[in-house]
View 1 (cartoon, rainbow, N blue to C red):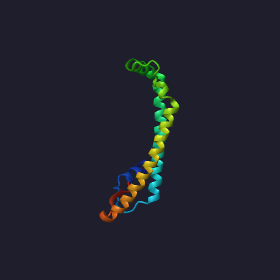
View 2 (view 1 turned 90 degrees about the horizontal axis):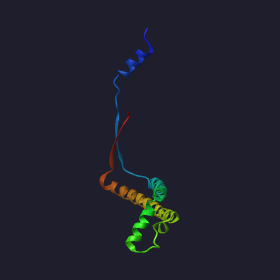
View 3 (view 1 turned 180 degrees about the vertical axis):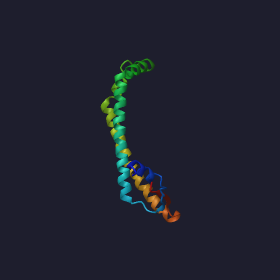
View 4 (view 1 turned 30 degrees about the vertical axis):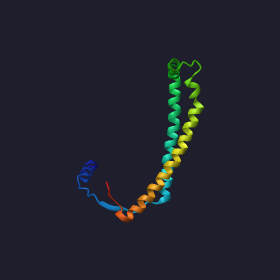
Length: 135
């Protein structure tokens, strides 16, 4: 009688045949590409907003703004100048929000334009050849 381990060992020694399939990508659905590019741009916009706020918090908590204030006061000979007043958290958050919105619009438009360009160029080139395997 053979054990279960021996049966499994005999099974794993068999040659596994890999099947390869080569397909051509001849069309990208426009609305799917627009939706995907919008989601990618929106997620990158959220990351940008959070990162800019975190960088401001780190700079404010480590006292870099205070050191920069004293250096710029010496250079500019203006005792009333303050970097913290010019770069406050609401101003940084608003600026990063506006930039993120613009990036979402531009990223979505670029995704749409690149999809249209690919779909038009497929007529000349025949498409991308893509290979797939089953393992």
